[in-house]
Figure 1 (cartoon, helix red, strand yellow):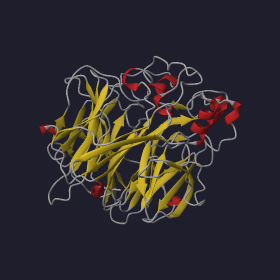
Figure 2 (cartoon, protein in one colour):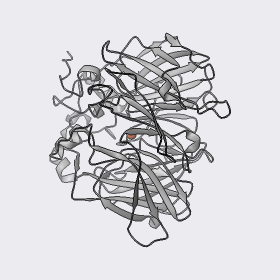
Figure 3 (cartoon, protein in one colour):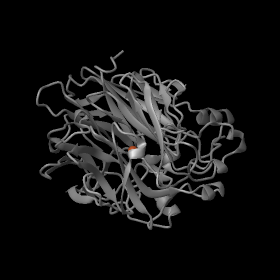
Figure 4 (spheres, helix red, strand yellow):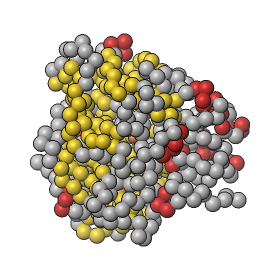
Length: 483
Ligand SMILES: [Fe+2]
């Protein structure tokens, strides 16, 4: 018999596990959904099948549930399916959780010791080279059928990938179609091995080069320009002895430095040049570009990681509404031999940065990201960090001008996607799930990207509650035809 889930932040209220695999045809829509929006919005969500074996766990350990909103000529259908990982299959067979602490195999039930990895594939759905991959950074991707969302199996690029892991954040060059990614702890648990990988437009693994990071740090995202690859390493660090003793996987080490490695995109990993900064943290990079000898990297800088379970393991506690400091641009001058980084504030604090796909890797003007604005209402709990965002922002990085939209008090927003328009001089659309805390249900709002402050063009109603997506991606019908 499956017992109730714990009554804690990660499992209660809007974070209560849903575990619903379903198909809903023709969702009810208020307003006017532009008929030019045709394609698939894939989302990845942690959604634990079973209560945690050790009584408590983080939201981020939840089994991967991939869902898709399929947009077709003003209609929207919804589908959700679990990613049938080896881990989930073993747990379903045993009818209980068999995995212990976050990323710690030494705390698992001995019956799962033979599994190749413990991944739940719950972080990002990536569409590239004609394949849909569900990825979490602690293991290999899982390939899914993009129409049925059924799991095809673990994916290692036809046996070519040597790394044991692949990053959940990838960068796709809008001109060449190449996908850049990496695996950290590529050679095993808490190792310093990083495998830098390039996948060709048609999905071939064409480069895999390994290097050593300064320490076994959390490398959730990276940045790519047309000329350079940027590897940030922040001091949230894994320690093998601690993990083997059954301890916490991550600990934020305030005395360590942050490192940024920069290599020429057409060079090799032995050309990586490391820059240092005082300890800080970031999970997501907005964009980056090269200008002569200078490399500019834009991201949301935090004092420390926002996840309560990492802070607790580090003996720290922070109000999640204040730990993010600002959006900054770090500029590295490769012509100078000095270990120096110029920092400039470009926007308010926040996270979930996104630029239009066509703007990746080059000088750009517009970005969209989210923040918590206490003026909108008191904090509400949803997602892995606890306090959820309630405000979407459009930032002009060249002027600092910010336009804001909030759905209002008692509502939180999940990560948005950007949907390009086929009309000339049209900035496209932003779409995101809104958590309706009063009814316990969800809806999707679609805004004009150029004017978010004007509010939704359409609201797509859902008859259920959608747990917070970690990440989602838009795949237009031109890249993946509608069935
Ligand atoms: Fe992420």
